[in-house]
Amino acid sequence: GENVEQHPSTLSVQEGDSAVIKCTYSDSASNYFPWYKQELGKGPQLIIDIRSNVGEKKDQRIAVTLNKTAKHFSLHITETQPEDSAVYFCAASRGNAGNMLTFGGGTRLMVKP
Amino acid sequence: EAQVTQNPRYLITVTGKKLTVTCSQNMNHEYMSWYRQDPGLGLRQIYYSMNVEVTDKGDVPEGYKVSRKEKRNFPLILESPSPNQTSLYFCASSLYPDGEYGYTFGSGTRLTVV
Image (tube, rainbow over all chains, first blue to last red; front, side, top):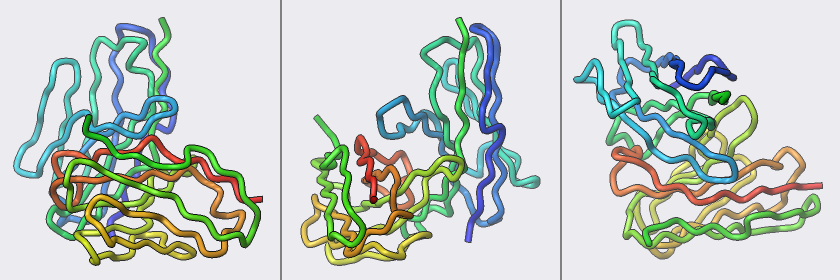
């Protein structure tokens, strides 16, 4: 089955700096890669996703890049703000494969004011 | 409001005492899943359901049961809980397979088995 590894497990940045979280996956058939943000006491929430036919996607201060050859994808947050502090999860799936979304271990991002 | 509702939010129980965590969604989603979250391990899928009466095992199904008798409800059953099932549990639903376009997660159930 799919295995997703995520680094780093914790990340501390100064407000206004950029943050980068990296994930690698093992199943070359995976073609859908979402990122979720989990705030304290809440369930994860989808913030951005990318499919294998796209190399990069941006949404305001958030961007995701995908390298299918190397089987890794990354989340980039620019101009970080204290409200970006949360746990972030990457995930991978084959899409239409029966509801199997595999998550990485999570990254706790702390943005210091 | 579109949401996934889990109950209870917190539960402390003793080893071997059967329990059920309820999950209900109001979005008419076909796909529903249960995940457990443990530090450093991320979210691991326990069971998922593709429709009424259609369920399948995820990565960590041992010690758990599920049922999907109605589209909106997907309860998680622990017949004989053990301390290694102490965890944070999330129910999620989606309109598309594999959570494409996003899973909607519940607020979580923190279970402690002593």
